Length: 327
Image (cartoon, rainbow, N blue to C red; front, side, top):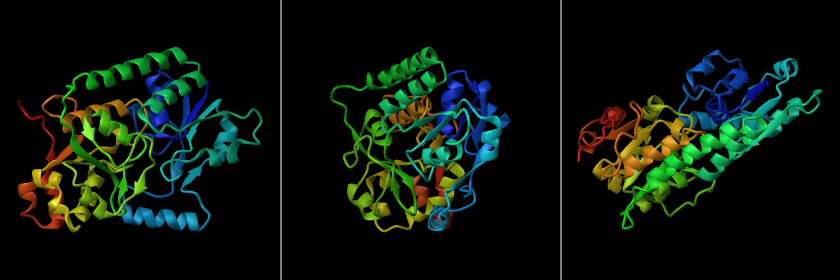
């Protein structure tokens, strides 16, 4: 079978199901596992998020849309020449990955049209369903069921650790800075299942822009910064904007140093590693209950005392690699 994956989460699902050798095309955003480096890139973003700030990315995106262009470039000639049996795509976020309507425009009139599988999970449960969906489309239903059962067991292992009288810290997740975007879809699921309390947005809610004052008013005790499509280096470039906002130092999470920058791959990609995102969330929310859940070089934690004594331009130096506390 020849498979083309046009979204990173789909590529991760395929490799987890042992289908890596059947992948013939991916996007420039597909970077996990390391074997993806040998795959043909057939879809590229027109905006380099590694070089631009969030504000510049937002401006570039609007300019493309106003001109009638999409944010991604798909090699339609390659699709016709190689004609995959299955193409994985999505309709969840037009900005993050190429969408299904664009894919259909390229393949609708091709003889022997591929099976275009559209993945649109909005909750943790639906992420598991999408893994089963890929397994069914690629003749690996049994492997998909086994994988999903293993992932569900890891979720259950987390939830089983919570006592009936669990004190839930008020948590908040930021998926974008300048403009501010809250983590939607499955992120509220992770926050709640990870032992937090987040009452503003329910699981499945779309990501949406918020005003800074809404964050201040909510007064989170834990603040997670997991910027979509951004690694920790880009997080550190973006973080000074928050420290310049009125009321930043009044937020309980900031006062206590409970501000964390987290590698986005465990949160923004609805594939198997989303459960690792839940485990990370659980440890950061309840370090008294969980240890060893956070992979190295994944999370940076704020030092609030140092942060008060350095220029805003150097504030990223006040975030240090997270270490599990000893109890």
